[in-house]
Image (cartoon, rainbow, N blue to C red):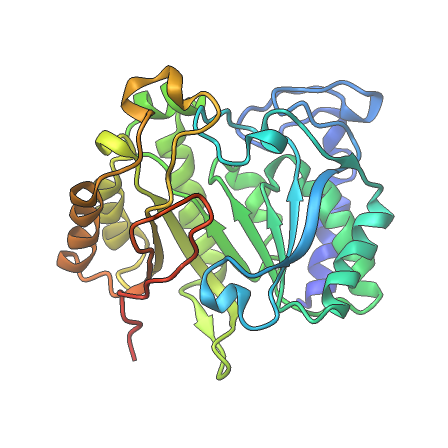
Length: 313
């Protein structure tokens, strides 16, 4: 099945979905076509904070010309430490029609971006599919990346098979109590792990072309949090045993306290060198040899300066 055929199939499946919205694990059941909103506060039309050629992603995603990134407003989680809280939780952004979203994707391709990078897309999946269908009919042919917190419905993800080329999920927690306390995401661990398994089933391990650009596959992002709140080492064990020992990982040290983090003493500081070293050492001991490790941060805009996990040859 071609991508355009997959998009047409998914568009048909999603046609009535927003009248009784169950596209994410919240399953709010609201009628977004009549103006009702659920947990994510999202209306019918997509709300976009910004779009640009982003050069701060992992090297195969940003490449030389940037990743065509679209930041959607709103979220189906409420992380107290969210670094994007101004638009994920305060909902800054502008409404955008399906047609305009499609035109934006084509514009980013025309700019020379290596991919279309959909950031926090879970609550706008049907609208994204409608826009992608229009864009594909008009010539969009670069990879589509789904950049998510990982709190995704497996049933929704199944409808994206053949559409999404690159999945970039967070695996934020290995303990549901922590997920509920700091992100208001009940059942996160089971939901997240099932979602990542489905993503891997669809696209497999990361494939990089001769120019070093990602064309297909899975990149799992792991943000180390203070006091082992993220339980990253347990997540690493799950990845090796249940996803793939060849999975590409992005180990991130970029946490810094912001938004409501200062209401929680344990989150009111950055991670220490020892805390981060424990995660990096676990990656190496488990033989998870593909991906990237950030260096210890000096500020909130740190990029992927370290590539200490050597890709397998």
